[in-house]
Image 1: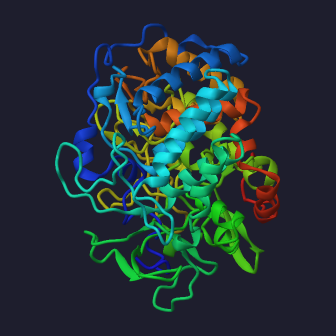
Image 2: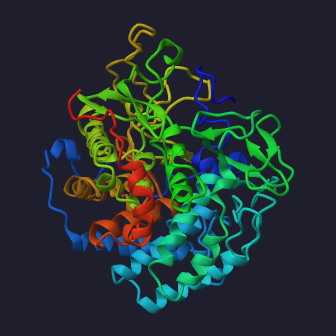
Image 3: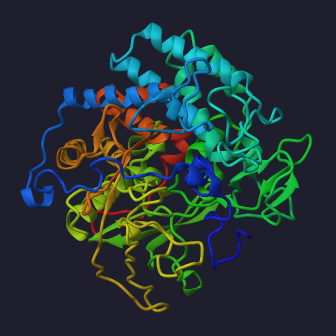
Amino acid sequence: MSDLTPSRPTGHRPTPTRRALLVGGAASVAAFALTPGQGAAAAPRSAPAYLRGATDLSLDATRVRTWAADTWRSLVAMTDPKTGLPADNIPESLAAGDRSGYTSPTNIGGYLWSTIVARELGIITRGEATARLIRTLKTVHGMEHHEPSGMYYNWYDEATGKALTEWPGSGDKVYPFASSVDNGWLGAALLVVANSDRAAGPWARRIFDRMRWDAFYNDNSDPAHQVRAGGLLHGGFFPFEHNRPGGVYQGTHIGGDPVWLTTHHYDTTVSETRITTYLGIITGQINPTAYYATWRTFPDTCDWSWQEMKPVGETRKYYGLDVYEGAYTYRGKRVVPGWGGSMFEELMPDVFVDEATWAPNSWGRNHPLHVRAQREHGLIDAGYGYWGFSPSSNPAGGYREYGVDPLGLGPGNEPGNGANGYFSDQEMTNYDVGFDGCRPATNPSPTYGDGVVTPHAAFLAMMHEPDEAYTNLLNIQTDFDSYGRGGFFDAVAVRSGMVARRYLSLDQAMVMGAIGNVIGNDVVRRGFSTSAVEKALRPVIGIEEFGASPVA
């Protein structure tokens, strides 16, 4: 799909979505199906928060540390003791035999930074942390990967470290794929370890130093495959024979044998994929213009009226590029949207880079506003009584991408077009205020149904609203059968009371990362954002002014 076509965004999504990359297509959907389990569909055990009229409580660091210790227990249960590789997911049993049988670079990265957090919080000793890190890194160092770029493939067997060629259970063929965002999270974790553990650090650095982020960077040097001025990152590439005819082309950005690069490029700023752009910028392999080539919103013209709503903003220039600083209007505030309006898109890179401090006029505005908008959506607009919306397990089975529809670029008004945004309830209730002058509103004041909240979203929000997020999590724990030996289960449908009684390693790792920053003295950010990283990245992102505002 051409980046220059105004009728659809290039970044979303001819290649697999986040969990399609992290859970693995149609075959894995079946393998991943969740059953409610005992008590999952029961009504809340006490009056919901929106009926209690509860006020926000001050964050209790002791309780939060207990949450972290239990979350760490689930990550240990997912991890093979010989390879040190974590499985993608595990049910509430936490039994070794119930591990998913597959893992990804993202999952491995999450386990690495979670180990640093567990050490910082005193959950494990320094010696145990180092032993765990070295065991994992030695395995990763020897795993099959694309050697010219140093990039890892999408799926491995956590028990052996071998790249998967068949999907566990179904036997469906797996085509090795090097994902730019998957490798981005592994790379971020490697930097954290390299700067946080003296004994394991050299192993992490050895792996990181062979990773070529420019392997994903389309800088427009090929006239046959042009993208937006400044260049964009491919979704990834297939190094071998693949099953994506029409969605790839042969080429290379780093020399050597060509690979099959995706024609899909990530092209939105509020996205988890910006971590990969950050890594390319700080290593000098990607031009800072790539950061400004991505959309804040799409333009405010009728050619783009398929997007969620008409943005407001003005155009500013950075690094010689014109950037439309658009924002969406929701509940009297202006927020720069992500594709789906999820906490994951907005805040996961913030676990590693203190974006609000380094970029006070962009992320310093948007992060608090996004969190506040999610909270107001759950408590006021939708009336769920709870909040925190992000891709997670579906309590009814499988996996789904949840978010706040008005905070996402993806439209909810074109069923079946493959470009729908994310929704906050099981009914996929669409919020549609139209596009002034181009498209009429169809549902400006919706009535929402069975909202689905995921604890990892609230933990991410804790970095910006600690007391509000803490209260929300305590209410989720109190009101639902939502907590097990491995911490919070992955998601809760708050009106039916159904619970996805499963732990996902990435979601648990986000919990650990956020807790490590909130009560662990910014341990993850300290590991990633060294003075050298700050020198390379802060001037790039720090000059921008978003169109975000607390007043519309």
